[in-house]
Image (cartoon, rainbow, N blue to C red; front, side):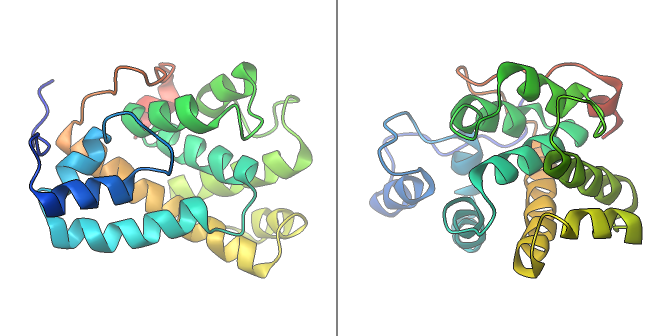
Length: 192
């Protein structure tokens, strides 16, 4: 399917170039992500989004492993191959997600024996949020065995943020980055 909104293209205006560089993590030399180039079609919106996105990604309280597991599960459950592929290619290894666990973020159940008790609690919360936009008492209590209040609150915001990103990427039909991992096809990822 054709991408519905093209991203900004070089040569970039100076402010657009600065904005795109602010989106990219320090030390990354690859071309800015298409998601960022599309968002820069609306610079004011992109600026507001960048603040929350960077806050969650770089300055959050959740451990990298927890953050990436939540992002992977939200984007997989939302059928967002674009964002799942970018995050798994960029962050999975440093977050300690083995190739088996990366695949299970899209294809596995929360009670799969490959997951730790903490990962199971995170996955149960994400799955319930995806289906109900809420968290039942048993799932919340399981989550709180592993996360303090600020971390639990951050998990809710993180899951909602990446659901928003999934809406944007899927709605615009952003084409996959050439280096990103491919989202395994599953009934779960196609449920949206």
